[in-house]
View 1 (cartoon, one colour):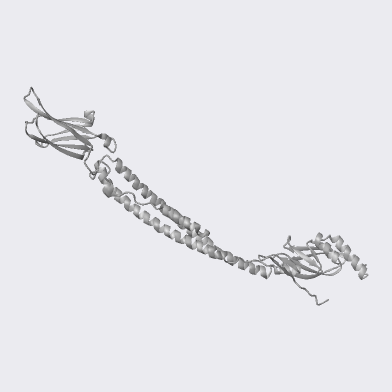
View 2: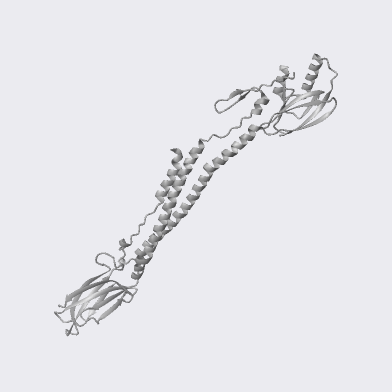
Length: 142
Length: 253
């Protein structure tokens, strides 16, 4: 038995040294920038959509407050927030975090009619690619 | 005579005393006190380990002798060598040099042959498998290093995925880089398992051969010429030893 000790030691060492594949491609979904990331994205939130008058009460506008959460990014990086008014698809705006100086954005739709529903799409863009999107509709009411 | 023999053996002979004793005994017994002596110098190969018996009685290791004239019998011996018997005739007042080269004994030559065969078998049964197992172990170590390198690369990929801030980089990682690295890791792991299995098999065979070779008896050298030279003597052995003896009968006397 004592003579078999070296063999047993070698076997044990080989068994302990055998690595297993810990990386499962299908299970790689933890990065919030990954298109396969499960659940609703919380990289940004639409805090509020408010309708108000301007131009001495002659016009109405909607102000959308969007808050981006860069602390949930996998690493600090530059980003843009794209604001698209779906009711009038030609209207879209880009907001850069560098220009805003903060992570809260005020997006304005300056031509709204009261009682009309307006839909908006918000896209978080990193390095020219859309990371996540959200859509929200609301009726313009004072 | 017994006294003289004891003195010779115990003190490794004081030759002038021996010569004197021989002369005295010769004169006392035979009344031939007119005998003269001659000097003899021995050159024996091997030079340091030989001994010889003079006239079947005295065991001596010295190379210079002074003997009474007349024939004297010598039995030369050294470990591993044959006993060589010869008679030297001493002429009074004359110095002689005798050169004797002791040949290796048959038992020693057989022992050497058996020992070489034993060592060769040991090399085949121990050194060779151990060397092969060692080589396999080194090969397995290299394969392990390759596997670990591939595994570390996968861990680096996982970290890169966790910290990726570019969607395109994530796509490339998941669709090209990581699958390729997984494939390389699987190959490296398979190679490691195969080499590890071969190493274990070699180690098992080595152990088996080692155990089997341990049962092979190692040749032992029994110097039969020494027994013949010494006469009755104690031969220590693995089972306690034994008394051995040699009987010489000189029919000419």
